[in-house]
Image 1 (tube, rainbow, N blue to C red):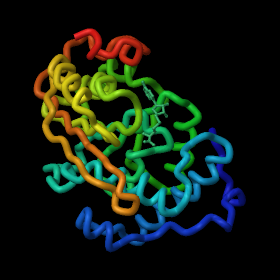
Image 2 (image 1 turned 90 degrees about the horizontal axis):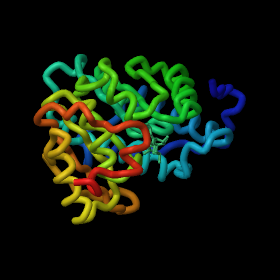
Image 3 (image 1 turned 30 degrees about the horizontal axis):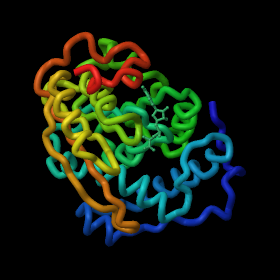
Length: 260
Ligand code: SAM
């Protein structure tokens, strides 16, 4: 268990910018006072946690706001704009969540969703457990395991409405991790910086093999540093063949695009 004691929170930690007008312009939404407090507390815990663990290189308040908070929520904009019929029943998984991105900002913003935060590094999941307790976040289930294992377990396979993956692996590997966990009709959102034509053509082949299709490719820029972003939405259209995901390590060592 990673312990973040109150006295470890340095008074010098800067305050996060609120950026209400940018939230409004870009997402047609503004955080409540409670959500702003949770975002700030999350920032403090990450800065303190970084002293023990290598959680993130993004540490200034503006960068944290843009690259962790805004980026996490902008990625789900299309899903968010289409309110799910009964959000309290919707299951989300953040695969390779690291220090909790994009899953924690999504959990804070959409408390009716149930969010599984999956990472293969036990220390990162211990850190997330501390954050969930300190921020009184009740709608998350942290799990220390690998996507290849979880995707083969009955309780997780074909059970999620939404999977999100940011900075986890090459794009076709992300597809192999995510599609087995989705229900038919579910969506995986792959958060990317660049998205090349080669990646696109490889992904088309691989997604078909896994029972999905590319539904939408969003291209946009971040609001402070003007950095390019792509969010690739995959929709699951039929069951994934039982042999996927392949055993631990195989997706990354032998990506499907090299086999198909
Ligand atoms: N998604 C976070 C973000 O954008 O800040 C973390 C990104 S970090 C570069 C990638 C994370 O994915 C690491 O914490 C790593 O442990 C996790 N990861 C990589 N492969 C994984 C797998 N097969 N199953 C579960 N987690 C995995």
